[in-house]
Image (cartoon, rainbow, N blue to C red; front, side):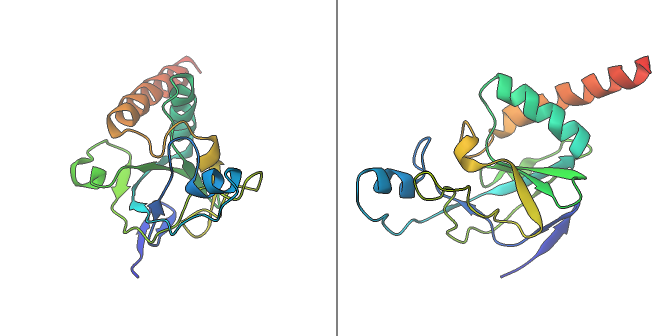
Length: 160
């Protein structure tokens, strides 16, 4: 196991596993069977300052494009779960994308249960997996939302 410190997030091995809009555990529970062993897909983590991240979350929610989102303990940064491989080409100023290594952590709790523990230590869910529109946020959509959020913040700051 390895660790990377990136803008307030201490990233341990992180992975996502979901079936459509529901976790495999929920599907199995609803069907009255035990969830099979779930093989998680690794994910990368894009971290941004909280103000820009919150604006981007609002933009993405309006467009049904937000995946699971974490916040750090101090609420200084937000972390968007994105598909693996995103870190290799991420180049958005003011943000960072950390490559992680999947550990088989299923996102989704038992039927009617609480959201699972966040896969990154010292964080909480802003948008839990079961409340997200997608397994992970599309990097191109996130890049556009972060740009729009930055322009919105800049316009607001100029008016004050």
